[in-house]
Image (cartoon, rainbow, N blue to C red; front, top):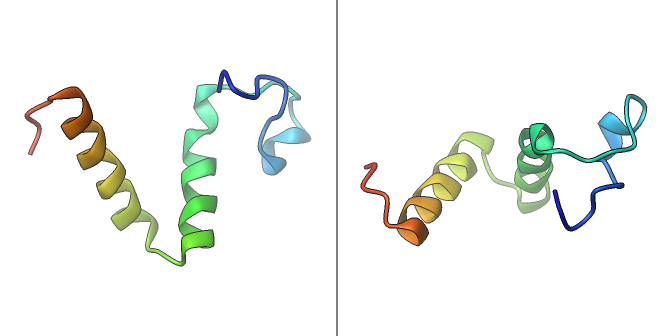
Length: 59
């Protein structure tokens, strides 16, 4: 994540101090927990929003 390159998510901080795109799943799972949503449903919403934003015909 370019907004916080030296602030990895808590579970990964023991392994590395550097944040990277590989941690997107960790962030999505925490977001689902905070929003009290099913992670699969949230993941679908994120994908649909991404497709709409970039004009991807993926549904």
